[in-house]
Image (cartoon, rainbow, N blue to C red; front, side, top):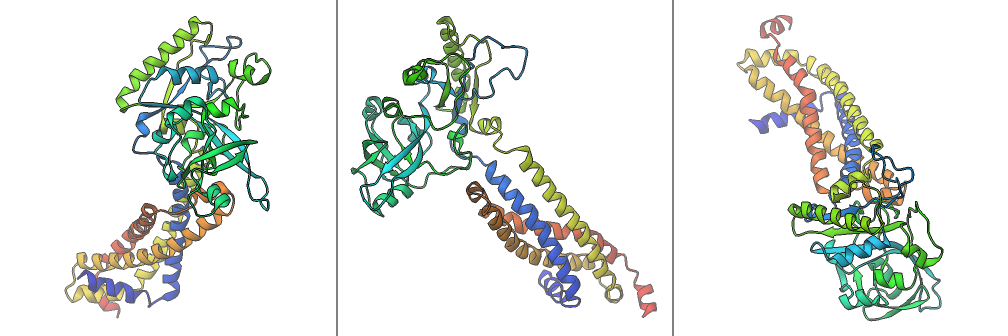
Length: 441
């Protein structure tokens, strides 16, 4: 019976093609607007490392001066103090707490290609410790991370992104070769296989942004410190700082990002206790003078704290769904007009023995046909809208793309919208009195 009603629904579309086209187009535009906006919001708010996001923690210590500090103020943490100082980062690394831990900071690394016909390549990347790769499940195309001995010695080794490796050497394995970078010779130990989590949770502060470009080079943290490699990102210095590189390392300036990995999310309380005890010990040494709460954020809390999904994005999604609601109201009116002219047909079918339930099923199936066609057109319009949005910036290219769940949601949303819009017109069609319609003929 469903297939029969489905065929009737397809045939009914040809009775009034102009009205049918208007219904389909109205529904498709509403679905495309809401889905394209929701797709961007979905990508921006997605979990970048779901397999272990509850086991990765960002620590924050308030090492600001006592001057101007008001413990009663809920916003007493310095706005730029969202990283760690070199002193704290090294102490936490040496503390050995958790399964793994990593410190990192952003760097700019100009590469001098061996080929004379190539100019100097300006690249951006980070200087992490070795645990970074295992903690964040970084995939390798060639090679592997540098060794623990390289990490401790600050060896001149480098991991390249796939794009930079192919730009320098072509589609071959370059592991073991050397490149001249930052006026030093570095040996290539690995090549990443397109590592670009969305959002870029490990470098939200002072980097290229949550949806910025892939890090092109990675060198050991200790190597960057040994070479006095300048920091490419944000830095907060609220106290006195001596000049020079060593002055930066000895200062309370915060410029290093830090992550812990625990064996399970249940170890959070133990990690918090360790962080509190560390702050107390440092306070006895004359540091961390403020008695502010020491904070821990798992990955999703860190994304929320950094406001990766802003209020503007959420407002845009609500406005898009408001537009969809407006389109549904218009579709209801169009369906009422379409079904009202078929009152005589309904009266004859009722007189021949069709029940109200059968009439309801028939007309609701016809609205589902409209929903399927509107959904198909909505998918095409959504792809077009996302393509236009992705042309606005490189960051938009990362978030403005549709995945399979969102593609399925588009069809489901279109079908449900059509069925919802067709409930009132279908109910009205079922109320037709056969006797009155037959007398009028």
